[in-house]
Amino acid sequence: MTATAEHGVVSTEPNEEGYREFSLGEFRFRRDEYFVYITWPTGHHIMSVDAFLRALQRDIAWDFFYGTVNFDGVFGTVNHYGTVDIFAGRYNDSYRKAELDYSENIQTPRIRETFKSILDDWTNETFDPFASPHETGSAFGIKNGDNHRAVARQRVQAGRMVGLPGDAPLRSDEAGYPVNRMFADVPQDEPEIYAEPGFEDQVSAFSLFAYLSRSDVTWNPSVASVCKESLFCPTTEEYILPIIHGNDRVEWFIQLTDQITWEVEDRETGAVRARVVMKAGDVSAMPADIRHQGYSPKRSMLLVWENASADLPDLIASGKTPTYPIDF
Ligand code: PHB
Ligand code: FE
Image 1 (cartoon, protein in one colour):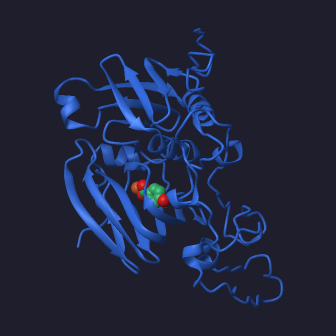
Image 2: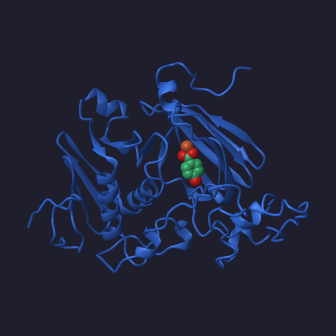
Image 3: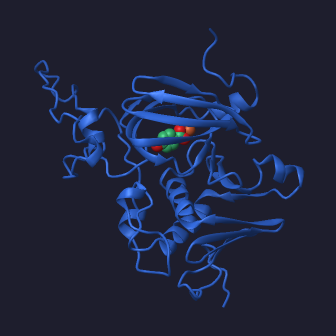
């Protein structure tokens, strides 16, 4: 049965495995027990369903993020902040040369709602796409319940310095989250604050390590402080970043604990550019013309420092601002 609904549902009847099929423009999406099948007018693609759902979860939670979210070397989205390109093979040299690449520009609310419907329908009760693979059940098999609670999670964003009136409910310890098994050695004491009388609601401090040690998700930066366009986005990482992020601006990494290996490729072609091994205390700046994916063998803490200025993508694309952060 086919009926094109406003959120792009193609079949209203579930397939043999119990999952609905979806469309978005000329793209079609189908899953079975193990795989996701994506088709477009000039080609088709296959992905493991766990990897697909982990990437989809982040694309939705970050509202298409900064620049490009590659689900893998073929499929992904580019954020134009109001509209989103959905593409296949666009940033893959072989697909481009063979003229198999394809992309469509879609109004953000439409792609957002379609992606949410896919994630919700295709995520079983046993699977949490934000959790580390060691801390979640299986994504595979025939349709088995749902995990509405997990897939509706959004990244936490502070409105101002955490702890001050008007911040966001960032404190996972207050919500009763346990310390993660890999952060059992992280001290839990909080700083003592002695504000001058009259400044009690303007001075605040909290232990970022204690906060991060209780994070129940991986590869999901929260926004812990906002100072004009400067966003501090700490996060806990384990296993592999489920997307390959193509920057539209420079982005800084400060490795707070443990170690992450970053595979860095050319943003347009996917050609290998560098491998960056970051140990606790290391700082790096990722240029604006690359894409990167991180590998974290132990749960680690990372601070991602973003410049949220809406002017940056155009300044960099037009060459007025360099793709690297600093001239030495
Ligand atoms: C990134 O693409 O820079 C990124 C995304 C999610 C993370 C860490 C880094 O958790
Ligand atoms: Fe990035």
